[in-house]
Each structure stands twice: as structure tokens, then as C-alpha cells.
Length: 231
Image (cartoon, rainbow, N blue to C red; front, side, top):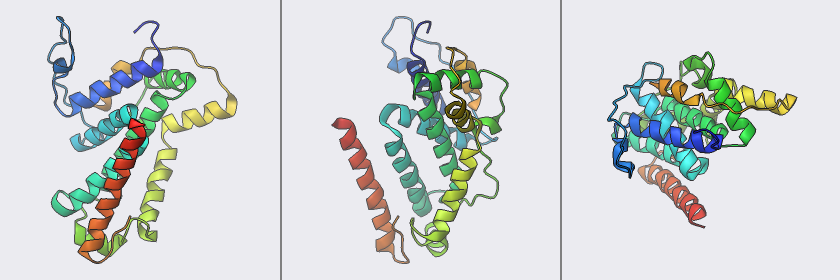
């Protein structure tokens, strides 16, 4: 909106896109006689629908409740998937982290938020805001996960986490902010993010009890984050 804070514009947009990503009717959240039309968007990221949901839901969680909660939920989701879903997926985790990073920039300082709007409003490809997922392991069920990585603090697991962080650092939004910090470039307001973002179309062991403890630790992290929010 004209005259609105860029952080508020970005927050509302990411929340709306996340609702679209999971197929929810945003009209039910609008208390107005002029409700928005029921628009169905088929969004993909790197030609995958699951990645766009991870990306946008993590972004929406970040702008609504903070990156700590979003990160904890992302890890818990993958641990849960390893026992009764499609398996632990590092590409999904990378999409979570990329969405979280974008949301942090989108709702950071006014300069960061407006510069991000300018960036996302220009010529853009998916690789500019979503790192490459090539060769990241996925579909890892619980027995294999425990055999390969043992726990979330193991060297094997940290190596993959480090690779995810490395790929994130190479993303265009992250490099943009790094350049801003180095050059102190001023920012100018822009309202271009909307039409572009729509295109986004530790403690495991060899025993079951330790695997359950990993989930318990993530749940505890969620409670701590909720407590901080309530406080």
C-alpha cells in the first residue's frame, strides 16, 4: 500500500502466499463485504510443489512467530517424516532455511526490506532466491538416518548442514545484504515485491529411545519459542 511500511507489506504478502501454497481460501480471513476473489495458484519451486510449501510456510512462520520457531518446526517435520512419511529430506530443509532467510530480510530494517523489494522486482530467476538442491540426500527413513548420521550433532550431519549454509550464503538476497553492509548503499521504497514473489509458483542414536529423544528435544525447543513469544 502507498505510504505503508515495507516490512508490513512484505509480511502480509508472505503470509498470503503461504495460504495459497497450502490451498486455503484467504477470503475466510477477511472481514469485509468485498472479499477477494477465490484465486487458485499452482506454484512450484524447482519444478516441485513440496519445495514451495516448505519455502513459503517457513517464511510465513518467520514473519509471524520468529525464525527460531520456524527452524525448530522444520527439523521436527523432517524427523517425523523419517519415521512415517516420505523420509528425511535435506532439500526440504534447504527450502525451509531459504524461506526463513528471505523472511528475515523482508521484515528486517527498512533499508533491507526496501532493497529486497527492488531486487525481487527486477529480472529474476529461481536460482536467485532458492539455492541448488542437487546431490542433497532425501527420502531417508529412520533406520538409514540413524546409520548414516547417528544424531543431529554428528560430524556427518553437520557436514550436510554446513553445505546447506554454504549454498544459502551464495543466494542473491543474502549477497545483497552483504553488499549493503559493505558499501552502506541507501535504499529507496518500492512496491514491486508482490508480482514477483507469486512466482515462487540432535540427539539420535542406534536405539529407538534416542530417536524419540531427538523429537522430544525439538518439541521442547518449540515450547521455549512459544514461551518467548508469549512473554
